[in-house]
Length: 84
Image 1 (cartoon, rainbow, N blue to C red):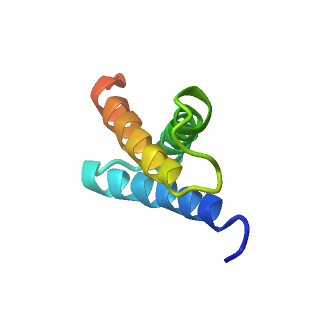
Image 2: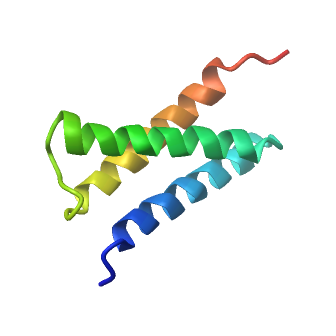
Image 3: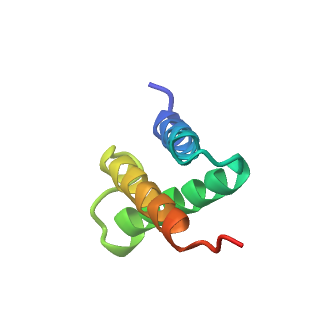
């Protein structure tokens, strides 16, 4: 496989999660949801690789961590954002 396939899968996964969250909530701010999902995915990968040392970039487990973190961040975004 290509050396950066797992990173591409994580990026596409974060984009898909943002798109699904935008569709489910009926909002029109896809840019905001993409930003939140991307930051969440980055934080999840950082937690799995650097903080808890549960995975390396050669493993696939950090992708699961990044997708879970993206979902958590998207849920928090839609729960706690202001609705002025």
